[in-house]
Amino acid sequence: MTTTDIKFREKESWHLGSLSAQARSFVAGRVLAELGDTDERIVVLNADLGRANRTIEFAERHPERYFNMGIAEHNMVSASAGLAATGFIPYVGTFASFLGILCCEQIRTDLAYPNMPVRLLSHHAGISLGYYGTSHHATEDIGIMRSMANMKIVCPADSYSLDQAIRQTVDLEGPIYFRIGGGDDADVYKEGDEWEFGKIRVLREGGDALILANGIMVSAALDAAKSLASEGIDVTVADLHTVLPLDNYGLTKLLGKSQTVFVAEEHNTRGGVASAVADFMADSGITGVRLVRVGFPSEEYAIIAAPYHLYQHYGLTGAGLAKRVRDELRKR
View 1 (spheres, rainbow, N blue to C red):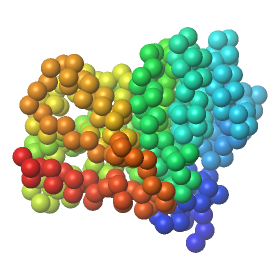
View 2: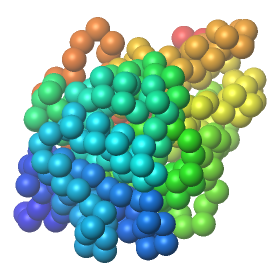
View 3: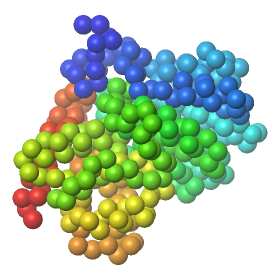
């Protein structure tokens, strides 16, 4: 088996050397290169992972605006703030565990506090780095970013939605945290599909329950819905890709149609998307809706194994999510 044959959810997916070959859905470098052709404000910084996250594609077209900062993530974030202060729009890329967790202080103080227009390309989120363990897992990053004033958070489900997320947010004020998967994310959207930053996208409608998902869990939710439909259980599936700011109007409409809502995320079940939805429900006085959190247990750290095994173990697959929905609906 060659590295080009390996998928992130397969047993050999733990090889760091194969990241570049697996990065089919990492389109940020290409999109930024295209935008950079006409927008000289765009610059890209990475921490020695340009091939793994494919930002090298920007470097090939605009080498004078591409900076490999080496394994110095804190410095990279602070440097991006300096570039933003002089009129540039920096895009900063590295592993989510290094960017969203390791660089928390620099993001909060250098980017969020002064409201700098820096875009954080935080890839290999969740447990997609598998065997590389707790230091490389990012299951708390949304919770951290949600706590910062001025921050925006978007979790694209596939290459098309990442493309759209980048293109639609170039001129937004302040920092944006793009939470990106492992690079081999299944296609959810096709070219030309409706996708709007800040707006929930309903992908399937059903009257028995609601599944709110983002990132890799959107594809899993659609798989689960298809399986459940064969059993006579019809669920609505919605892509809650923008965590900050929440689509309050869209969320209110969806919650008003269901008695049970499942929030599926590749994140700790406390502090992440489920907590954002719970906060919204409490603040809006929404009652009569049961919220079920699907993700990593909040009282422990993810175990260490290949992603293939981890997604199965935590039920973050179509089959796992279908089972959870089935089991919870039986309790009603």
